[in-house]
Image (spheres, rainbow, N blue to C red):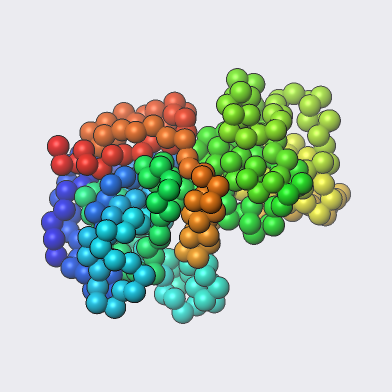
Length: 348
């Protein structure tokens, strides 16, 4: 085992502070990675503050990890020392259930192992994430990063990116489809970029008229202000697909009315109760569905697509010493659109 510098929260009301963690020595199928960048996800904040009631302390967050391979196990075939790689939300799964066999490890029927606050099958206790100097991960869960991309801006693709990419692909969004992206934030800005690159006619749906300029700069063809009843009525029954990134419970009925017959709205942000009136679904055979991140195969496909189309996240860089301030800014929606930590700063 090796002691590694990290940042951790010791309780739900504690600030993140320097903390030493242990990483396992590499096994035959492991890859050791020196972490260069780690994205800041709102999920990190939820876990640190125990908003979901399942946090395990100390919490070392971070599941948008970019770094270089420093060592590989004797049975590793896909990676070598010096490779640019990523680690997302998952570091293991059973690999035996139907979901895993279908390359959908995020739905592992025996329990996926999250990058942090998951069950550590090797050292016992729970897993520690990317707010740290290095990490050791099973080869199967390591991703190849296209070298042509802005490396630091790739980090949020490993959560925000795959969270929005997966439903767009699962519901077969294609050229000419009218796609609405509801909410412009860390998830929504990636939804716009992907839907545009897939050839869809992209409509940003927001409560804030002030976001119209940013939405169009990101690739939206139109902006629909959801508080404007006349605008909403004009678009009623016209969307092939809606990607709903709103992070809290809300009334979905005005959005359901925007869907065509047999069309789907997919939730990727809210894990709270939502308001759905059955009539809005019945009168048009419409669907409301959900989607959780993506499997490893799908995440690699997303990264390859980003490499081909030069897609990365819009980011603001910070040092790890500024992480607590960054959390407050995320909560106040004061970032466009994701923070990324320069992990070299952890050695200062």
